[in-house]
Length: 608
Image 1 (cartoon, helix red, strand yellow):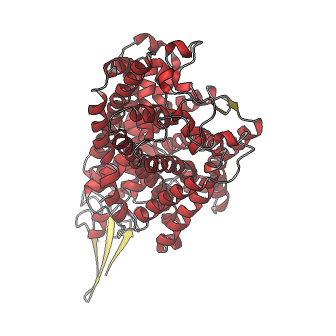
Image 2: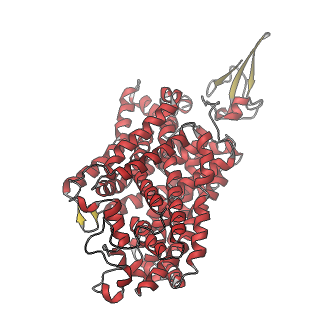
Image 3: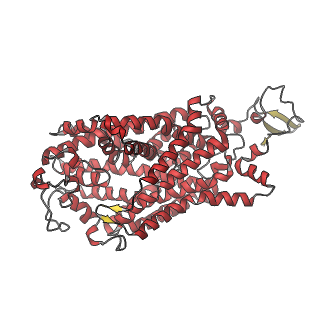
């Protein structure tokens, strides 16, 4: 029987350290009991299997691991590459100077995005814990773990609804004639206008085609799917739509059966969900560049306007996009990395997956703007009149373009399969962060993971029902703005400060050296200590200063809905100060002893 005993101080009475020429913090004693008595051996000289399996003091040496390395890589890529890569980045790039936008985007990727990505993977892999219990390294910051877990849960409430929309469109595409091709359907208004009759001369008055709400595609989305015309605002929600409810049930069941067995099951699902979008994007690009006007769209996408770099808004857009695109701060990267083998090279993984994510964003722009160029050509308008972002792009403009192509049913099915797979693995990542974070903290949940997974999935389903009512788009807009806006930026800022300034960059670097055999270079240490916190502070301040009231198209939300939104945001952020106060007053000892115990792990404050 092997029993691990951490020895951080007063070891000289057992064995002099200088004869082994090692530092105290690297020494671990192994008590080996056999028939002949007790023998003490320095594990830095004779490492035990448990010492090789995890960090010193790890209590979870039997933790589940990924079946294969590729399972982990695809899971991280699948989480990071989501709908925003398709419906947000291409438009931001076009709007903010085309190729010139890549300058601040790549700059922020290198000085902040990659360091934060690397930091979270290393944290999770070394400590082999979820987002909450990982803060055994600095107990006073455990509240930030609960903050990011709650944010990931909030995002699941509405993100699953967008996946349900995609599924609804997928089912609706399985017809000989796409339902958003023509007017005359039960959901169309008397004002519905054939797209062929809409051109530059008809629009006029600065009205862009993308904002034209009486086309068949626009009316199918807002009247046929959302039934928005039956709601007067966020105060008038109505009942959930049964068609979307069924789609949401399917989405929740997919998530449950992908996650109920942990990474052993989810690691296999991503073989499809993480790779399918690349196949579809490539197919759509090949089809897109054969369309008339496609080259005009691509030229507009890549047009370089360096003068746009003089605008602060461009830099803010680049900073926020790189942050949200990589997905740092949601607890997902920590959760995924915690299932890695202890000596896995997470440095290489961080560089690879973050690069793949950003290249995917850029590549998707070609598939999107080739079709937007075709739309502009077809309606004889400028690219700027059809260019848009968000749901309007993937549920109105792109489907309308597809509906005019030969074999439109096939192209629609392919496109919405891509949206479905983009959303599923990102939602899987968010839910895994919640499951891992809480099961690591509460062992009763770990023993009943399948039941807890079902309860979490069912809970997200119940809340999501508010987003599929007649006025559900207003609830979704509120959650999208406040649930993971300022709160997630705040959470990651506190996380970066906790790791870099309280736990310490030097100690963190030593942890990485124990895993991979080499310390991070000076560049990474400087980024973690100074650049990344400064970057996050800039993004927090910029997002706060540029924040505006809630709005959906022409609908202005009432003041009480903004207060409700801030209540949602504060409900997660308050975990940070509340837990810090709780921790401080719950620990025994003098003021100095409590401060030390709050800010340092057990093995480190014993050494002070």
